[in-house]
Image 1 (cartoon, rainbow, N blue to C red):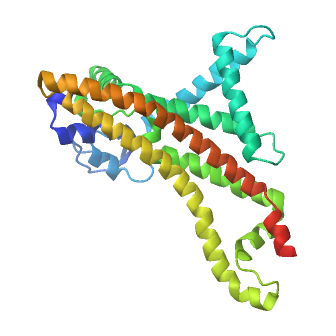
Image 2: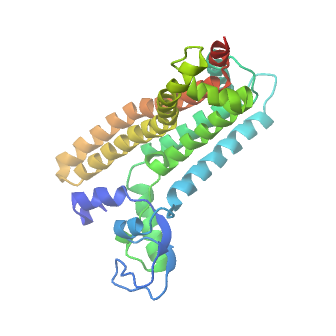
Image 3: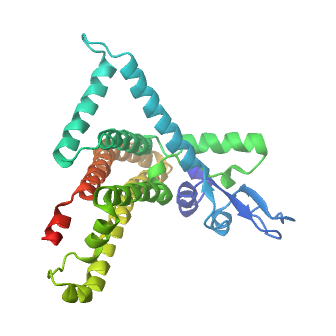
Length: 313
């Protein structure tokens, strides 16, 4: 695919998701056809994907994220089912090592009682790691196979078929997970502190005098600071994961372009790809760990009632 496109076109093609959305009647598509009616369809260009608007669905992101989540459930459920009290198998030992590691991290960062937090942390770590791990698959293999398969089945030009295999390089996926964490933060904050306690946390911190006629004037400043701090948590959580994986994917794409620059380029690109892949193993593992730890810390903050007690005093 790299040899058939300009470098810019090649990069843009690899950064475009398989989008499914609605195009209006009278719309001129990438192949020149004009829609007589508004139609739900798969985008054949980046412009079509943009014109589909907010409600466009990234089928590749959904497919890979759900598939990898099911793979995690299957593998760990199978390991649990086949667990024996004797000498464990290699995979069972690996699963036990991961579970023990996550359990220790959660105990160190979450001092409260909630039976959901540790399983959630395990799920986040393994699921995000598996999604990140897809970045180590050579950038052309799966997109090229999918493009030619779709072209053979539908007759669409392979250059109009997009397919990304790393869900965490899609901002919709990372912010979606971050917003789910944010929703849990709000839920547990209200459950543990009550609606009044949650409101007091947003309006009587960090500035608090203990005198109601002074605190009334401090409420707008407190609310602004606390609201910005609260909203920044999911935003930074999602952007951090997206930014690191997107940058890693971009480097792999740039290395793939070098493969087509003669024999020396092919050898150099091979060495670069191997070196970056080895380093990237650390990146994908670290980013999964950071996402999991920050989620656990945010859950601990949602359960923490010390600030509320300090306000009451």
